[in-house]
Length: 342
Image 1 (cartoon, helix red, strand yellow):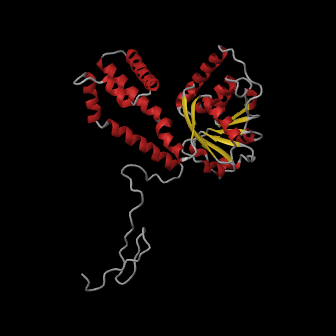
Image 2: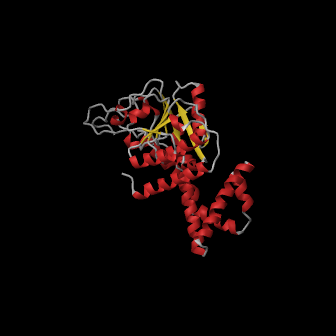
Image 3: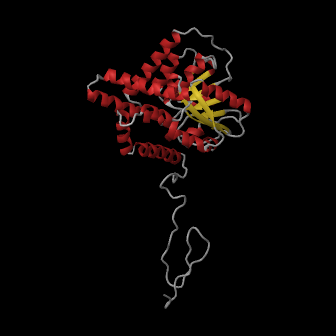
C-alpha cells in the first residue's frame, strides 16, 4: 500500500494540474490520435503523460480509460481530468483500446497480471516500466509492443524519453507513439532494445544523480552561512544556466569547463579536489551499476562493463588419473598426466 505522504504528494500534484488547466484556454480535440487509450496504473509518470495528451488536444479525456489498484489515486485522477473514464479492472482498460499504456511496478508483471487482460492483435502496448523487455509483454499476449524509458522531469513537460518497438508496428503508428511520448518532453527512437537499458542509466535515473549533486552543493552553501533558500536558488540557477549554456553553445564540456578555470584560481582548486576524490570514476561506476541493474531486472546477463570478464572462467575439474576432462571453453579433451610423467 502507498504511504500517506505518497498520497499527499500525488494530491498536491493533481491540485496544481487542476489550477493550471483552469487558467488555460485551449482548444481541445474531440477526435484524438486514437479511438481509445487505456492506462493500467496512474502514478506520477502516467499522470505526466495524461495531462499533456489532454491539454494539447492530442487525445480527449473522454477517449482515455484508467485503472489503478489504488482507488484513491485513480479517483483523484478522475477528479483532476474531467471526462476521463475510470473503470474497475485492467481488462476493461484493454477492451477496445488501440493503445494501452502499462505503468505498473515491475514486480507486478506476473502471470496473473497478463492472464486477466486478453488483448486483441490490434492493440499496441506502450510500456513505461523500468527494466522489463518487450518479450515480457509479447509472452504475456501482446503482439505489438513499444518499450520506453521516460524520466521524472516529464512531470513538468521537460522529460527525456528513449523508446523502441517491435518490427510489426507500422511507420504511421510509430508517428502516433512519437506524438504521445513527445507530448511531455523530448523523445528519441532507437532500433535496438539494448539502448533502452543503457538510457535507463543516463537519462532514466540521471535526475537522481543531479539531485544528489544539487543536495550536496546546497548543504555546502548552508554550511558556509547561506540560508537554505538562498543556497537553493544559487544552485538551482547555476545548474539550469550551465545546462542551457552548454546546449546553446554546443561546445564540448571540457571547453566550457576550461573557460571557467583560471590557473591557480578558485575553480582550479575546487576541480583538483573533485579529481582527487575520483569524481569522474564515481559517476562512471554509478552509471554502469545502474545499467547492470536494469539488465538484471529484465533477466539479462549483467556481466558487462569495466572490470567484468566477457565470459565466465573455465571450470577445471579434478578427476581420477586416466580419465578425460573437459574445459567449458573448448571441446578439446585434456588428458591428465600419466604416472611417471614430469
